[in-house]
Image 1 (cartoon, one colour):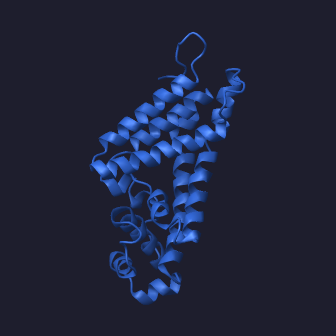
Image 2 (cartoon, rainbow, N blue to C red):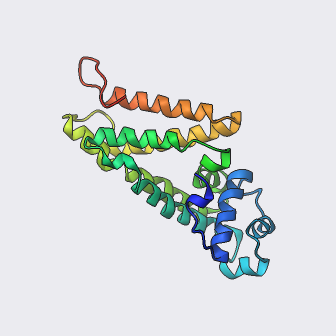
Length: 214
């Protein structure tokens, strides 16, 4: 998912800085990105930067919020919602995440996952904004997971729709880290494939046949 997918074509100076933040932070990390870098990439002056953001931390918070808003719209409009079976919608979500693993590393890795690893201790405001983005996205998956459990008469299995929704995000964020470590998308794709197999096993009926479309 490139920055042009989520930033309007006609951009204000503020939006240009956010777009620069999306790209640079995912490429260089939060600590490795300076205000000068952001201004140069956005093509704006330092005065314009400080007109919109009192600090780099303030831009980080705004970027996390903007990321949540526009990626939320992306997923809300995704085709997997058209499936009648809620389990197919959930596994369709995983297929959609797999499809997004394309392009260069900064294009498909997660802005908020990148930032929170660096700032969880040093910039609590960014940490909280990143947590809100990740957990908020996970909560959008809960209704389909719960509906799939209910439709299959699944009682207490020792896990909940909420815990499985968060687990999907843990796997995806871990997949991004491995992709960076190996400088390859292949390991991320394989991680999503393993996650799909895990979900199929969780929803398998007694007897061993797997549920969903596989």
